[in-house]
Image (cartoon, rainbow, N blue to C red; front, side, top):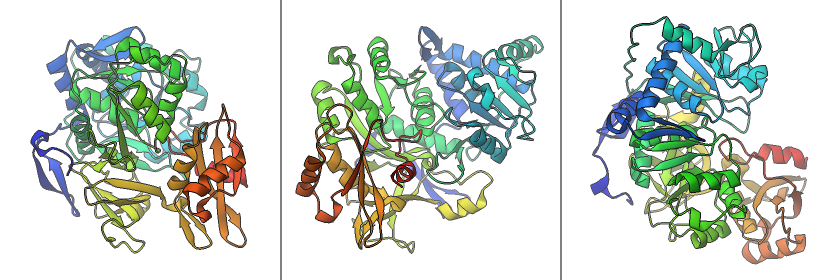
Length: 537
């Protein structure tokens, strides 16, 4: 095991429900709100939230959360109610998130790229009582006719509509009409804190139920796995509404008493300026974002010396990007991580100093986690063999909101079926080879996408690559490559020659699509291969 036991909090096995025995941290936060209370008590004068020139200390953040909770309470929001957050990266996201916890309600963050039909589905599926949203998104907000449970539509900004409540006026009225302080709700570990809808690459999204104890273990895994403290400052450059932004950055920074620097969107130049100006120490992004930083004219290593931790996930990091970052920013400790919405973010994390020897892995299984490798019949394979990764631990959600059929299909005795093909070595390091549904079969020969894609991204000029199966009446499918090489695209013949020198002949791409824009990805950074297949058809 690669996690030093002398620095880890004590653990024990606990019975969760009827079918789960889970290794847990003995001492852990009782709830998401309790993390904020503790940070306020210990670090009240320290910065908690930073946005451009605005700053809120933990004491000020607590007051904002109380005011926001009072406003929501005035609309009848209480314990167990679902409140959707259709909110971009802005400070109000943090205040509303914790205000919902203050009331014992359930937060339902939704990515702002979602269109009205998708948002309507989500609000109906979780029976949302209220939705808080950016004013510019007002035309995407369904009415109560579309969503019968929806009693309040709250705009954070000034918009002209009869049935939309403007947040500033609501907050002002709620405070003026209430002289007594509103008591916070006492949450329990098994209570659902957040519902996150999977960005799923097929079908309707499913609402993963993140409990208070799921979140508590995830933030502790990040804290101890990355060595985070109250002196750290993290840049929120990924969407706050998705599991990485919400758990790995917002919740984790609040847990350790660090600061969250909110960026409204990721633009490499602006991000680098923020890292330099705010002396950012920690980030967690997708590999493409690191590559864009290296390509930016604003990249000046001398101004980025505070940046000590760079987590990444969602896709492999191209070797040339790792090498260039090591050359330009030797103090930056790159940490590959693997997880999902259903695992409340981290399952594995690269231990400090392990990158060089284990560069082909996504890190080691975290202390309270368990990863088993299973065959198609649900039997565990021999050590080192390849199969589907089944994941269990206190960070794994209990299932999907109001969807027992999907829960039964995806969970077995507390193990979540990841859909990822991989292996676990004797040292506990995990390798991911492909999505189960994305593995190619060329005339009976199995081809793992990641091997071919890694080969392609080692070619000079290639920034991104993905392969899919092209239907073939003889072989079933052949390898088709999508390549994004915006600046200096290599010749197709040289790409084929490069692959032939590194891969078995049946793995070499036989046809190509040269992209003018980056690969399509969901909000968690995973390539949407169904869109690539549609484009190829």
